[in-house]
Length: 282
Image (cartoon, rainbow, N blue to C red; front, side, top):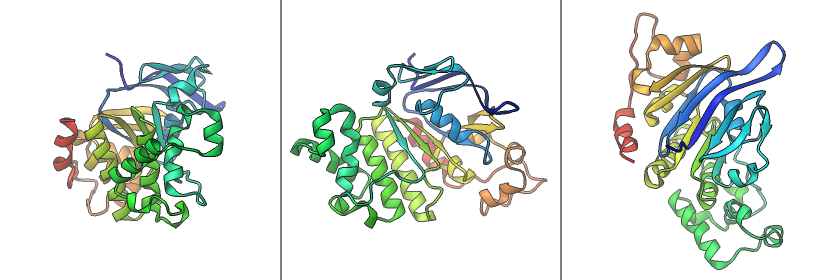
């Protein structure tokens, strides 16, 4: 089986006595939607950046869509081609505010168009139509020719997701995509990622700080603590005890309305049960 993502024995230290990632191994199958959980500094963002080939580990190996991203502390010489199949959604959107939304979205095509056209931002009519369809899929095609800076935060994040659709990404990595959004915008962004996961069979790995959101949208959770994987399994089997070990006193803040206390070992799942069967059927 060719995994969407395969990480083998990945370690990374930014300081001699402080391991950001400690012998991390995991596999993500095509079509899975997986949440990365963990307190701030646990290694979630660092792991995503290694998967995308932005940072080289000290040791270990990463393959995405069957292509080597890095091995034994070195980024693959062919990483640029491999990245064409990886969509990365940043917390801060990474749009050029003065350019139209459609131009930002069509940037997802740049690895496939000639250099002179990418420099001139010259796209054919059929390519523009692809961008408009992607914007329609995320529900903001009516804003295609506005400046990106005029959109709300949630709309900008959905434009960033549309860019991964234009890119034809087979795997999407999303780093805290709802961290700066209000609850309604967060719901729409997560709905969009889940819909793409279902309809296109795209593997999605999303790091989240909101435990209830992760449990609602992602059938599988990988939890990190101090750079180590301490849980990898069904979100339904996460207990309050496990989550307290991850988050400590922060847990009640991260699961508003859950009412998690020290003498309770179950987690109210909210809408997760309604979403998970759809994802599993994708």
